[in-house]
Image (cartoon, rainbow, N blue to C red; front, side, top):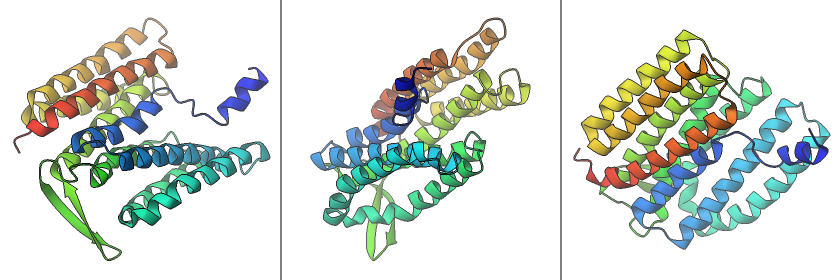
Length: 269
């Protein structure tokens, strides 16, 4: 691999499909609640947090090798420059700090133990990204789209949770973990019937829940189920590389995003 490419990989996350997983739940929360400049600011801070976590995880996994230190310092400084002013102006965002703090610790522990590909580490990442669909509406034009589902108190502040934001977060959590299982059947766990069965069963349940909630979500679930069955079967007789799998997941992630934006306001529960 050329030196320039190796250097770039220390700065830019190279996991196919991860960008969609990180950004789309937050963008769905923005869309459902009415996008505002404050949300764009928070989205920028969230993206920098992702870059910082990616860099810190590699630094920990390498046991603090010098070549991985600079991205951590640079992204740390950028995250602070963008995030600290946001926190000062919008301290209510700190009410989510315990949730993301725990998920970050789990992620970094996985990297330190070199188990960042484990299901529990993947689950922590999925929960972090999906939760942004609930956080974003707090700073939208309509902070509680669909009404308030529930709320909680933290640091002396009350945080309302919008019904639509909670629905969106749950949908992204279920679909993204299904994506984790599917990708494993295509790459690291290719050929293992236990993972294939888990992936198919997960997507069957997801499809049934989708149809119970709203037909568009059910149709999206059916498409996810079809890909979880068809592509692993195709991969038995031909090589389907990580790039192709990543592109498929980007496409299905966009489909889920569109389904969430359309269907969540129409859920009758």
